[in-house]
Amino acid sequence: MGSLDEGHLCVEIENGMKLDVSEKEPETIAIEDAVKVLLQGLGEDVNRDGLKKTPLRVAKALREGTRGYKQKVKDIVQGALFPEVGLHDGVGHAGGVGGLVIVRDLDLFSYCESCLLPFQLKCHVGYVPSGQRVVGLSKLSRVADVFAKRLQAPQRLADEICSALHHGIKPAGVAVILECLHIHFPNVESVLLDSKHQGWVKVLVSSCSGVFGNENADAWSDFLGLLKFRGVTVDRTLTRDSVNQSWCPSNSSSMAKISSELVAANPEMVAAVASILRSLGEDPLRKELVETPSHFVRWLINFENTKLEMKLNGFACGISDLLKPNGEISSRNSEQMHSELNLSFWSQCEHHLLPFYGVVHIGYFCPKGINHLGKSLLQSIVHFYGFKLQVQERLTRQIAETVSSILGGDVMVVVEANHTCMISRGIEKFGSNTATIAVLGRFSTDPAARAMFLRSIPDDNTSRIL
Image 1 (tube, one colour):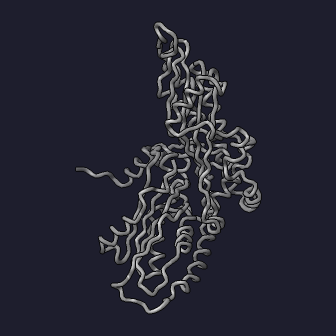
Image 2 (image 1 turned 60 degrees about the vertical axis):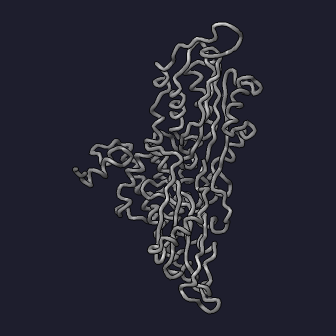
């Protein structure tokens, strides 16, 4: 059985496409150059292992995630309309004349136009055929994806899908409901002060045309009735104004001052993001995008390398006093297992500059007579390593090694995470979850201890949102 050359494998495997292409489009090169500026602004070495190909990966992900700008609904729908008669006799609606058609639970992603972070959505589309013709069901998903693969806001996305389908297939009416989920990424200072930080903003928006235009119409009632099986109710939809005010966390008034300060402190980084917008075919001066570069830089600066190292050093120096014996220290045989579960974390994938998030579970043995670490201290360690450019495997190891150095060696760490790069690139694996484990000391040689700790981890995975 033959083997693949390592270099060849690296070229072929990334996102199912070649990374090392000899001829790149100008837009790709421009995005790569901008990403290098952003990495250097974080104090990173763009030539270190793990970051060498990050600019190209980011460029490919962004261009793939905004490919909708180059797609036309007409090309998708044309040729996908099929003749289908209605009822042969009797009173009613069915088939190609008045029979309601709904496609539910379409998992999509888009990029928030206000901060450039990806957001997830479930799309439910319904239409009432007319003219004795129906459209291929897969085309409803493809049309929705055309507009999702652009810089978007929830309400405009729903409106554009609805309008495109209404004009493209000429039905009696179209209804669209979107359940959108936006990550609310905290900064390192706020998350240490607020243990109950709400990490998500969820909104539900709708758009309709034709026979769905009246909220009391039979078609609208039938549409909502069928969606109730999926837990969707119209009472949860927001008005257009409230969506615009509450959707993206970067639009909050408390963040406006921070953004303006960052613009002054990091003009090269802000200009680099504006260059990325232009390379994607957008106008950075469009009113919805004017503040986007500063919003993105404010978020990215959370992962500045030098600042976090200094904070971690200060934290580690002051922790030893908390671990002093509180009495006579017992023998190793009387050690007790302690655990802290579901410690939240937020981090940034260094390969794609996309968020990943989830929970950390830490187990350790501590002799009787030694103060065990409190949850707040372990949570602080998790955050200190989370708020930097990371990979999950390294994050797991660093947390385990730090806790081990404090407690003396017997530590087990499990990290469960959702990676945005798994949904907002070509692979688009919605619902996937990654677990990594680090075992040190006794846990590495004692299967019973590992099994005991793993049994303590709750079945409900708190890192899964949708």
